[in-house]
Length: 92
Image (cartoon, rainbow, N blue to C red; front, side, top):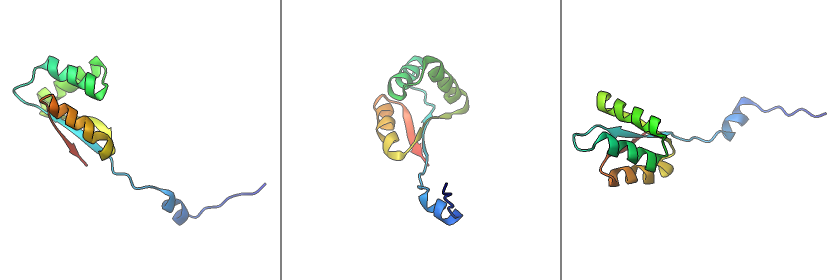
């Protein structure tokens, strides 16, 4: 039976540096709770309960992160939220 020994340096070379980004949704005085909830369900595939919780957090705290991932994955999602009139940005 053979044993494979990797040094810490070899293992570190195998790790890919992926920066996780977040879509941040900001509060506004324009959109209704129902519109925000429906948009999060349609665009982010949130459950209604998740979307309602996010809407309340945005309302009370002013913002909430709604999705995490790689920039290339989040960019079209964020754009769809903006297209629906929501104030959303991507942050690293």
